[in-house]
Amino acid sequence: MEDPTALFTHLRPRLFGVAYRMLGSVAEAEDVVQDVWLRWHGAVQADIDNPEAWLVATTTRRAIDGLRLARRTREHYVGMWLPEPLLTDDATTPEYILETASDLSVAFLNVLERLAPDARAAFLLHDVLDQGYDVVARTLDKSEAACRQIVHRARQQLRQARPRYNIPQDVHQRLMRRFAEAVSSGDFTTMRSMMAESAVLIGDGGGIVSSFPKPMLGGARIAQLLYAPHLRRKDQLRVVPVELNGRMGLLRYFDGMLESAMAFDTDGERIVEILVQRNPRKLQRLVQQVVTAVQ
Image (tube, rainbow, N blue to C red):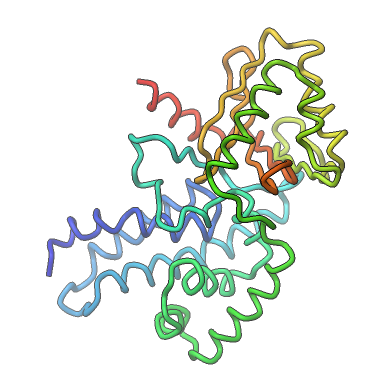
């Protein structure tokens, strides 16, 4: 067998990807991976036939436990809960540039919150990470038939709620750069024209900073909200396009301080959904990534 430490280091990005997709939290995902490392270090290596399968299964089971605990905590969360965003265009953090990055978007992770922990794990293992039902069954300690049914029901739950459009990266980027220019310059006409009439904005302040208690509906209202800082704080505003969770989004700064991270879902021509992370605790690691990237 390959050196256990080297093998774990090689597979760590994949394990983090499993845990992060399950939990939507960088800190919680890193805790899971650290716990799996301790279990791996204490395991009898000769008894493990397939180390990668063992590590993925152990990570998934620990993430299921973590999600069950997190759900009880999130019942008391103030306002709407959104996943913690990741900066994924930073060459200094290759572990975050994960396989099937199209299924890493903030919008997709937010939709996965609809699923129960076992269903989320089964869906991710089979439909996102391309694991066979035999692997899913062993991981969840269920029959293959039961896992097929779980994944089928999960697909049905997600069908109406998943991000609606599969837009090529270059199209999405052009749209986001144009929107970033409009937000930066205070071009309300362009901002308004780029918003779908039925657009939705969801904000997460975590009860620490102000945000909306429910989704804001309507492209015109959202454009007015994003334009408002130009009426009183335009000299303090800076908007930076970055890649968040595999898709271009925006970081908004006031007086040099990161105020929010915005992820977008578009139909290729207009913005249909904006997910705004304002919770300072969920922005801390993003700030650290940005600082590291510019050093």
